[in-house]
Length: 387
Image (cartoon, rainbow, N blue to C red; front, side, top):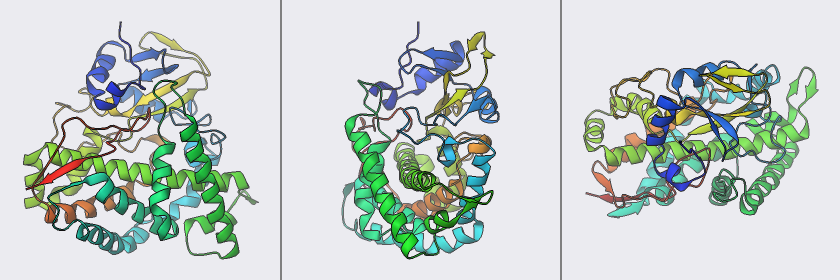
């Protein structure tokens, strides 16, 4: 009998053999360790994501939810309130705003690369990607530039879990409380001195003629910082890992950077950092002979759905020319990631510059220190040797 425990380090290191067993033999699986059902096939996950009326986000969307967050953020509300919150944030991610960000992002990447000049090996995470992705997010949200290192460290801690207790530990909750205090300070400053940024807009926005509750402003700001840093940072590191592991694909991108958009989509499919999110059932559901009850939690195993050969032929092969339509790297349905365009643009620019500066590299260690998280998957360090 299979035992799938998303808290085990072996699952962080390589979940894909277990995912295959789930898809083939237990497509609707009760995980006693996680105390929730696990959906692993692409079609089932997509159908669930498309049915918020049955698979609700209102009780939280992280595998281990942070206290008091559910029901007050974009990812933890259902329509119609979700749609109105999304509309308030959407303007920051318009094509025009993204185009205005392109050159500043490129300048940040070049500045960070200049700091590496002359080094024959470095940690891609700590020495490069963590710094540049935090700078990008800080510029978008209008946060004080000098705070980026500490904010990133707290954001990464927030999304982790304790593999023994299978929940948030004291250090994770302390990081969450710190981030709320930090966000509260930024919000107070914006109320005193409004600026042309997203947080200032939250402070004055209304839904149906009513201002957002202070809790909504605080937790939405906290979540944007956390999700922005972890999602963009994790995505960037996983793309670098693919470039280190697949030398032929990397050489092809060095020779033809125009293939980067397709390579980004394939990386989101093949090795997404957003592995598992949860929903709660609003009614009894029967799937693959299993009856899930109203109130049960359900895990959407995006990482498994992206390797489902029923949707993607030869799914375990990394192919930058694949064009994997319908991948779950950014989720789906009404809760599809709002920052997808920002992530795609940022990673494209980062690797246009990085591959030009470092066309040949390999990872130093085959075993990687994976972040202990039941939701996200990315290495805490990625040592690269430059050739």
